[in-house]
Image (cartoon, rainbow, N blue to C red; front, top):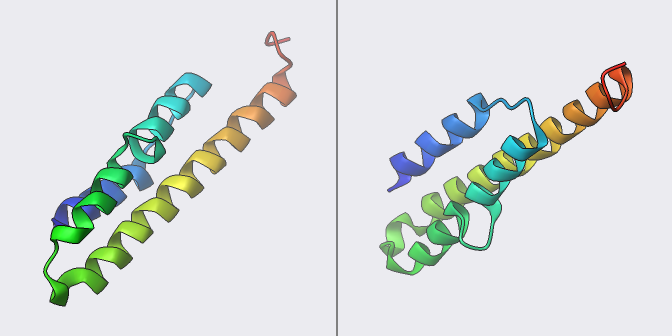
Length: 89
């Protein structure tokens, strides 16, 4: 399970998007109410006690990486819109 979360962290780090819609879909996939993070946090209760610390830290790393990536991409898209104008002029 921890390896699966680490794979998602790599996927998050390598994600790029050119539109706000793609960023929003990415945000929902990871950070939404029915997203992967909530599924991993729900799975926490089934993790053996000796693995809970590592599992929790890994899930928190995924959450932080996803949040930072969404914020970074939103800022990049917004600054691109400001530079080129709303209609690309």
